[in-house]
Length: 209
Image 1 (cartoon, one colour):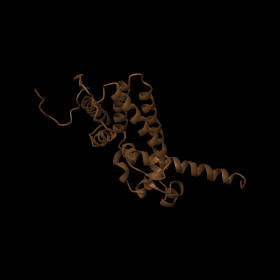
Image 2 (cartoon, rainbow, N blue to C red; image 1 turned 90 degrees about the horizontal axis):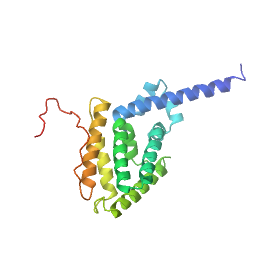
Image 3 (cartoon, one colour; image 1 turned 135 degrees about the vertical axis):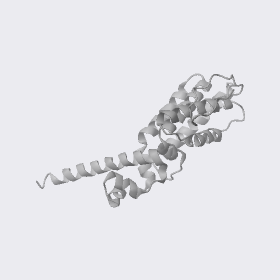
Image 4 (tube, helix red, strand yellow; image 1 turned 90 degrees about the vertical axis):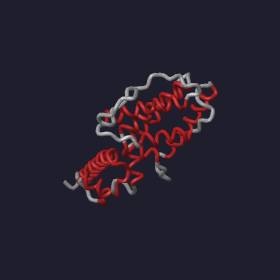
Protein backbone atom coordinates (compact mmCIF):
# COMPACT_ATOMS: atom_id res chain seq x y z
CA UNK A 1 0.00 0.00 0.00
CA UNK A 2 2.84 2.40 0.85
CA UNK A 3 4.58 1.70 -2.46
CA UNK A 4 1.45 2.67 -4.40
CA UNK A 5 0.78 5.91 -2.52
CA UNK A 6 3.03 8.25 -4.60
CA UNK A 7 1.38 7.07 -7.83
CA UNK A 8 -2.05 7.73 -6.31
CA UNK A 9 -0.99 11.24 -5.35
CA UNK A 10 0.34 11.91 -8.83
CA UNK A 11 -2.92 10.68 -10.32
CA UNK A 12 -4.96 12.92 -8.00
CA UNK A 13 -2.75 15.89 -8.86
CA UNK A 14 -3.26 15.23 -12.57
CA UNK A 15 -7.02 15.03 -12.07
CA UNK A 16 -6.99 18.33 -10.18
CA UNK A 17 -4.97 19.97 -12.93
CA UNK A 18 -7.42 18.85 -15.63
CA UNK A 19 -10.41 19.98 -13.59
CA UNK A 20 -8.81 23.39 -13.13
CA UNK A 21 -8.11 23.69 -16.85
CA UNK A 22 -11.66 22.62 -17.76
CA UNK A 23 -13.14 25.17 -15.33
CA UNK A 24 -10.81 27.91 -16.58
CA UNK A 25 -11.70 27.28 -20.22
CA UNK A 26 -15.43 27.40 -19.48
CA UNK A 27 -15.26 30.54 -17.34
CA UNK A 28 -12.75 32.40 -19.52
CA UNK A 29 -14.82 31.59 -22.63
CA UNK A 30 -18.01 32.88 -21.03
CA UNK A 31 -16.75 35.87 -19.05
CA UNK A 32 -13.23 36.68 -20.29
CA UNK A 33 -10.07 36.90 -18.25
CA UNK A 34 -11.58 38.99 -15.45
CA UNK A 35 -12.88 35.86 -13.72
CA UNK A 36 -11.35 35.67 -10.21
CA UNK A 37 -8.97 32.79 -9.56
CA UNK A 38 -11.04 31.81 -6.52
CA UNK A 39 -14.09 31.36 -8.76
CA UNK A 40 -12.08 29.06 -11.03
CA UNK A 41 -10.98 27.04 -7.99
CA UNK A 42 -14.56 26.81 -6.74
CA UNK A 43 -15.87 25.60 -10.11
CA UNK A 44 -13.04 23.08 -10.34
CA UNK A 45 -13.82 21.75 -6.86
CA UNK A 46 -10.34 22.48 -5.49
CA UNK A 47 -8.97 24.90 -2.95
CA UNK A 48 -7.14 28.10 -3.93
CA UNK A 49 -3.87 26.64 -2.66
CA UNK A 50 -4.21 23.70 -5.05
CA UNK A 51 -4.95 26.01 -7.96
CA UNK A 52 -1.92 28.22 -7.27
CA UNK A 53 0.31 25.20 -6.82
CA UNK A 54 -0.46 24.13 -10.38
CA UNK A 55 -0.79 27.62 -11.90
CA UNK A 56 1.01 30.38 -9.94
CA UNK A 57 -0.55 33.20 -11.98
CA UNK A 58 -3.63 33.75 -14.14
CA UNK A 59 -1.33 34.40 -17.10
CA UNK A 60 0.16 30.92 -16.82
CA UNK A 61 -3.31 29.39 -16.43
CA UNK A 62 -4.70 31.23 -19.46
CA UNK A 63 -1.74 30.24 -21.61
CA UNK A 64 -2.12 26.57 -20.68
CA UNK A 65 -5.92 26.64 -20.99
CA UNK A 66 -5.75 28.01 -24.54
CA UNK A 67 -2.73 26.08 -25.78
CA UNK A 68 -4.80 24.29 -28.43
CA UNK A 69 -6.28 27.55 -29.71
CA UNK A 70 -2.86 29.18 -29.86
CA UNK A 71 -1.62 26.28 -31.97
CA UNK A 72 -4.70 26.58 -34.18
CA UNK A 73 -4.05 30.30 -34.61
CA UNK A 74 -0.47 29.63 -35.66
CA UNK A 75 -1.66 26.98 -38.13
CA UNK A 76 -4.12 29.47 -39.66
CA UNK A 77 -1.33 32.01 -40.15
CA UNK A 78 1.01 29.37 -41.57
CA UNK A 79 -1.68 28.27 -44.05
CA UNK A 80 -2.28 31.88 -45.10
CA UNK A 81 1.42 32.51 -45.61
CA UNK A 82 1.74 29.31 -47.66
CA UNK A 83 -0.92 30.44 -50.15
CA UNK A 84 0.78 31.54 -53.40
CA UNK A 85 -1.74 34.40 -53.60
CA UNK A 86 -0.85 36.65 -50.64
CA UNK A 87 -4.15 38.56 -50.74
CA UNK A 88 -6.18 35.36 -50.67
CA UNK A 89 -3.95 34.11 -47.87
CA UNK A 90 -4.45 37.30 -45.85
CA UNK A 91 -8.23 37.13 -46.34
CA UNK A 92 -8.18 33.53 -45.11
CA UNK A 93 -6.27 34.57 -42.00
CA UNK A 94 -8.68 37.41 -41.21
CA UNK A 95 -11.74 35.21 -41.68
CA UNK A 96 -10.45 32.24 -39.70
CA UNK A 97 -8.91 34.16 -36.82
CA UNK A 98 -12.03 36.29 -36.39
CA UNK A 99 -14.12 33.12 -36.28
CA UNK A 100 -11.74 31.44 -33.83
CA UNK A 101 -11.94 34.45 -31.54
CA UNK A 102 -15.73 34.69 -31.90
CA UNK A 103 -16.10 31.15 -30.64
CA UNK A 104 -14.08 31.81 -27.51
CA UNK A 105 -14.07 35.17 -25.74
CA UNK A 106 -11.44 34.05 -23.26
CA UNK A 107 -9.00 33.04 -25.97
CA UNK A 108 -9.56 36.36 -27.71
CA UNK A 109 -8.61 38.25 -24.56
CA UNK A 110 -5.63 35.98 -23.91
CA UNK A 111 -4.36 36.50 -27.46
CA UNK A 112 -4.76 40.26 -27.28
CA UNK A 113 -3.16 40.60 -23.85
CA UNK A 114 0.54 40.98 -23.16
CA UNK A 115 1.79 38.59 -20.51
CA UNK A 116 5.51 39.21 -19.93
CA UNK A 117 7.30 35.94 -19.37
CA UNK A 118 4.36 33.77 -20.34
CA UNK A 119 5.33 30.79 -22.53
CA UNK A 120 3.09 31.90 -25.39
CA UNK A 121 4.91 35.20 -26.01
CA UNK A 122 7.27 33.65 -28.55
CA UNK A 123 4.33 32.15 -30.48
CA UNK A 124 2.53 35.50 -30.51
CA UNK A 125 5.65 37.28 -31.75
CA UNK A 126 6.09 34.65 -34.47
CA UNK A 127 2.44 35.08 -35.50
CA UNK A 128 2.67 38.86 -35.73
CA UNK A 129 5.95 38.74 -37.68
CA UNK A 130 4.46 36.24 -40.13
CA UNK A 131 1.35 38.41 -40.57
CA UNK A 132 3.51 41.47 -41.24
CA UNK A 133 5.35 39.58 -43.98
CA UNK A 134 2.10 38.34 -45.52
CA UNK A 135 0.63 41.86 -45.50
CA UNK A 136 3.70 43.27 -47.22
CA UNK A 137 3.47 40.64 -49.95
CA UNK A 138 -0.22 41.50 -50.44
CA UNK A 139 0.73 45.17 -50.75
CA UNK A 140 3.46 44.39 -53.26
CA UNK A 141 0.92 42.44 -55.31
CA UNK A 142 -1.31 45.52 -55.42
CA UNK A 143 -4.25 43.99 -53.55
CA UNK A 144 -3.82 45.39 -50.03
CA UNK A 145 -4.17 49.15 -49.61
CA UNK A 146 -0.81 50.87 -49.29
CA UNK A 147 -1.60 52.64 -46.01
CA UNK A 148 -2.47 49.41 -44.15
CA UNK A 149 -0.47 48.77 -41.00
CA UNK A 150 -0.53 45.73 -38.75
CA UNK A 151 -2.24 47.75 -36.02
CA UNK A 152 -5.27 47.91 -38.33
CA UNK A 153 -5.61 44.14 -38.05
CA UNK A 154 -5.28 44.36 -34.27
CA UNK A 155 -8.04 46.98 -34.33
CA UNK A 156 -10.27 44.56 -36.24
CA UNK A 157 -9.63 41.81 -33.70
CA UNK A 158 -10.41 44.21 -30.85
CA UNK A 159 -13.69 45.16 -32.50
CA UNK A 160 -14.49 41.54 -33.28
CA UNK A 161 -14.04 40.75 -29.58
CA UNK A 162 -16.92 43.11 -28.86
CA UNK A 163 -19.47 41.01 -30.74
CA UNK A 164 -21.78 39.44 -28.15
CA UNK A 165 -24.94 37.50 -29.00
CA UNK A 166 -27.12 34.95 -27.25
CA UNK A 167 -25.71 31.97 -29.12
CA UNK A 168 -22.31 30.94 -30.43
CA UNK A 169 -23.74 30.23 -33.90
CA UNK A 170 -25.14 33.76 -34.20
CA UNK A 171 -21.90 35.21 -32.87
CA UNK A 172 -19.88 33.32 -35.47
CA UNK A 173 -22.26 34.42 -38.24
CA UNK A 174 -21.92 38.04 -37.17
CA UNK A 175 -18.15 37.68 -36.98
CA UNK A 176 -17.97 36.27 -40.51
CA UNK A 177 -19.91 39.23 -41.89
CA UNK A 178 -17.76 41.65 -39.91
CA UNK A 179 -14.63 40.00 -41.33
CA UNK A 180 -16.08 40.39 -44.84
CA UNK A 181 -16.62 44.10 -44.26
CA UNK A 182 -13.08 44.47 -42.92
CA UNK A 183 -11.60 42.68 -45.92
CA UNK A 184 -13.40 45.04 -48.30
CA UNK A 185 -12.07 48.00 -46.31
CA UNK A 186 -8.52 46.65 -46.57
CA UNK A 187 -8.63 45.92 -50.31
CA UNK A 188 -6.76 48.38 -52.52
CA UNK A 189 -9.51 48.33 -55.15
CA UNK A 190 -12.66 46.92 -53.49
CA UNK A 191 -14.55 44.55 -55.77
CA UNK A 192 -17.79 44.70 -53.74
CA UNK A 193 -17.89 40.93 -53.45
CA UNK A 194 -21.04 39.52 -51.78
CA UNK A 195 -20.80 39.56 -47.98
CA UNK A 196 -21.48 36.51 -45.79
CA UNK A 197 -25.10 36.28 -44.57
CA UNK A 198 -26.11 38.82 -41.96
CA UNK A 199 -26.84 37.74 -38.40
CA UNK A 200 -30.09 39.04 -36.93
CA UNK A 201 -28.86 40.99 -33.91
CA UNK A 202 -31.90 43.15 -33.19
CA UNK A 203 -35.39 41.65 -33.20
CA UNK A 204 -37.79 43.18 -35.70
CA UNK A 205 -35.06 45.43 -37.11
CA UNK A 206 -36.08 46.77 -40.54
CA UNK A 207 -33.99 45.62 -43.50
CA UNK A 208 -32.05 48.34 -45.30
CA UNK A 209 -33.39 49.23 -48.68
